[in-house]
Length: 341
Image (cartoon, rainbow, N blue to C red; front, side, top):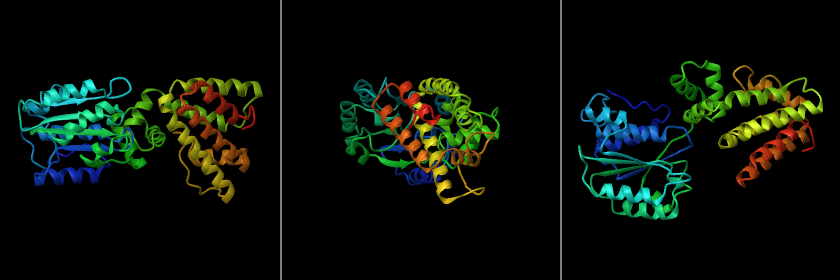
């Protein structure tokens, strides 16, 4: 039997399988979860299975029939994708979708629409979509994805069957990354899984943007035994800050992991942990326990607390759309000890 390729989302797969075998598919499903855990991929695989001409009710698409081949090539006449245009989904896109839903499916029992990142919808687009959800035309299935349900109108959320996806365990996320990037070593795949918080899709995007080597360089600079003169430290901090600012979209994840390291170092210092502290892995070469040990030995309790406050201020500055280069410069100059936190 063909099975879905999505790993680590067993509960979601069981819910969908039960609905299909019982013949009780909802008219709309909302897939929620962190970025990169497989929401859109699962929605596409479900669509492919429902449009497949040969698959059984509880299986994935056969991958060989004309319908599956059209899905794989991205030109199935009964599959439509709506995604953000600029900062969000606009009402014009919803209007085009509503017009298409007015006609019956061309080749099978369903027309399926995938609406990606629906938490970005503007209010007028959301209100227009709500009318469709209240009175869905027969023969149509809507698959919505969102980072979480908080950004959606409660009325939209209440009219969809919720399918919650979660971040994967690091070992499993590392395995998924390895499948997509067999050229990477296991240590780098695991480091990417950690850096993305167990979200393989996000990890692969970060790897494409060169985030992993940049993060490893940052940790190496912070843990170096010989940090050089103050001038060299300032130069290193400003250089790293400028490069981090180029990846503003990934800044939250970088700051999150840096916060974990500081918190673990603070806990280790206060509890006097030595060799058995279970921290996060900072890179493919140096494990997190080594990084935490260096942080614990370099800074006292007051200094580590100040570092955590510096991270909080940097996050708040980025949320206020302050200059990202300036926010990172202030943060790293404080971490490098170029001026007090």
